[in-house]
Image (cartoon, rainbow, N blue to C red; front, side):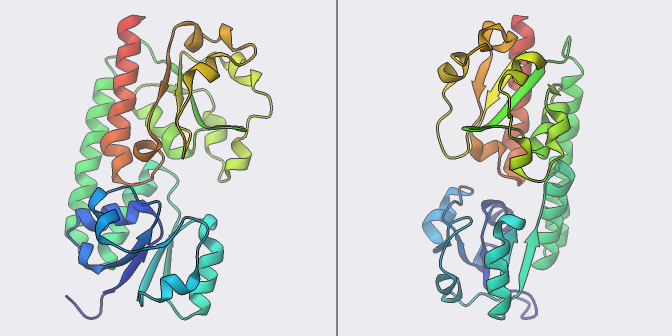
Length: 266
């Protein structure tokens, strides 16, 4: 290992763990978030030193990191504490598909594996291109409502909205997807979904099981085309709400499959 590159990295979100493993740089990882899901072996091999927005600074410092990778303003407090403790911090803030690709390239540069990282980016760009090509074969674009949370109802974040478009759909709340904060994507009036009349509803309630029957039973929602047509589906948050390679490798094809199945029934 190049001694001038970080040797003991702590990753406070799952996507940087996923990238480092994919680059063959997992030996540099000294600690991970307890919410890490990819790859599965990371949960067995690496110490869990933090949750997502809560945890003990001393637990992180105990693994003697020379770099901590964080995510967005959601981890601003722990980032400040780490910097005050003299630990280098690199804060990612990927919100779009392009940002995800940029994050992968940046992680590669940080560990001296830029060539491998750019090869991964090229592979993911090929998946995006092939998905777009398949999406052009849909007879029409389904109108899609993506629900990230149910109480309160929150519409999809930007990279999800973009992937809906790549896969051939139309996000009925694309106007809200540009908002940085989840609070700005809260639907104050649930009947707004009824008015926007989605053909497909996709639920991904981060951290708990999606309940299609509860969605269908909401007051006034029986008139929604997706509900009337039995097009209320779950996509696991692990493959769609983690802004890393898995979202493109697994989440994007899953969206296309849903849209193709809908088209076959229409």
